[in-house]
Image (cartoon, rainbow, N blue to C red):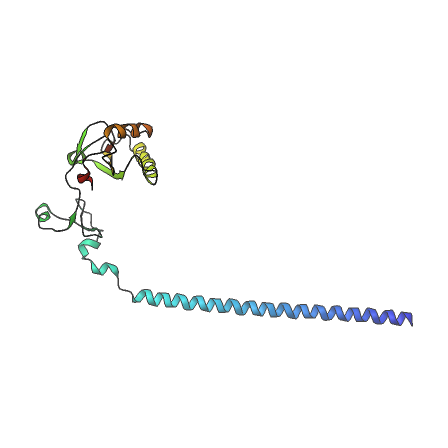
Length: 206
């Protein structure tokens, strides 16, 4: 009797294990089916979204159509740099006799400034030069040091190029005297022959 009892217990345990294994298999199969359905659902959602995006983008007008071909076509090499007009700085190429008839041209007005070496700098100083222009002030603790550091890299990389000059206009000319600018330049390794720190009349800068 004892042997039969133990045999029954063993068979019950075996059947329970088999049933549990079968349940795990069914659960895994169900999980796989659920995952497949989820993946298929997201695939369809992404496909629909991409289709809608394509349709919407195709329906938008080309923003370049609002400008003349002379403005948007840059493939043809130009012999001169463009002028800029209106607030969005539309580039246009003009002949000398066309400049006077144009309105809203944006450009650099004639100026007379003094640099850190007490030398006078005007637009004539820029003629024939590749000019890198920036605005700063010596007491600026925000973005100005970053600008100065980046321009110093320009100075170092173009040190032997005499045609490349840097012109930094002070935004607080009443505070940034030539003496103050000179000290600022010395502290930051400014090459006075290449990099002009400019101060002057406030009305000419603003």
